[in-house]
Image (tube, rainbow over all chains, first blue to last red):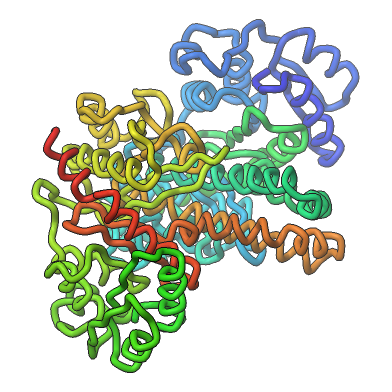
Length: 320
Length: 320
């Protein structure tokens, strides 16, 4: 139910995902009038009929506690009870994180789940980036868990067997950073995580690291700075289109390429961010996600289930 | 002397700045063979002949201490002795910060100078953003100084009389942030700085704030994330140019607009970052700055001198 554009976009995304993945079965949590007719028309769709919805403007923890029949709460419960293997939502980030964390539960050994996104990069490279906002304050010892969860996700989603790990800070040299990032550096350098040193903001959409870790404050600022830049460049192109016929034609000819790049930057191409550290994969798309992003997000959840993401994270954490 | 492309680019920038500003006088610090012939050919150019240069790969503090006749050290000394009113360099950031801080000296009441950049935004808006990397660790009480210095710079450089101040963190709500940014929030909310609340990464190239403050770790990551995104989008456009004739023509027609936007994002349009909190304005351009950026940087230093940036900062700090 949680999408800025209403549930129909999500249903269209489900339809596309079912068409692309012949073994996928979707359990739809939502209102009777939305999910029941859809399930009647489609094979491999089952339903959890729920009567409540958590809006974007509600306090996540309070809403999850009070609205026991909210679609996201019921969906998380279905995963908990083994009726589904993973969760996808385009609803309120806070509500998804809270409902999933309390409803599905954390993996043994994981103190703080983290939100990871696959960033596009140069020369076809892709980078798993976490934490993009689940934890504003991160103690150094938790950074090792983040690195291990990122490695497991890079193995499953990017098929990289020994991913390199970088730490996001303000300079490439080992001595660069705040007291906190220097402590992160020190603990990562002594952990078994294939640590390759400090990463900078320029490496996020680069090609030097397979996994980049940060606390959720820094990660969130970085991610939204990337978003801001994409939006800014697009607005400048629009300005020039208004000012010159030559530029207008240029933008028209480049439209497909620009649109594709915007989708890559927004995370829509990969379907959304994944919450790592729970007993099942959870994918959270933008509220503004279109049917394509919803489809990609559902398929990403299926990939994570089939690739045994949760088992790989469990193993990685136990190694430490 | 400090430019990736060699001193001739800097000299070309000086030439442009002299042509644009009829009252500008430039004191050139550099090797005899570079600066003397140039000064002979130009009015309003004087020289400080120096025999050493600090390279990009040298340890800044050591190099500044040992190379007493480095161009940047001599330039800072000239400002200290009143032979020049401001400093511009495209050399190593560390060397410029160190030479300027020790050579020119901090303003009374300023514990930590900060590096500010004017960011482009939506609808013609511009935002003063600091600290972009001079201080990795920033105590809460210093954030008030950063806000005051940013306000003074917005007044002088952007001609905004009562600039609004935002704090960069991971959410717009007052309760969002790490323990550290919550402490920043608290102290800013109780200071006389026209504090407008939390800013997010999306606001950096936006239009909601006139000044955005952050510690230098977060600020540097954000700035380099912006840089990374610009580079990424450009690389994607290049890829599409290689793949399709239609896109190639589109990129050609949009070239001027894209180039201008890239210049805005790199800071070249505004000439570089300004080091705030010293007894004279100091502008630091990218090592890769072209003649246009050098010209803009020199003119920005002149604007800061004429607008009495240092006096305005002194006043603002004393108010507190």
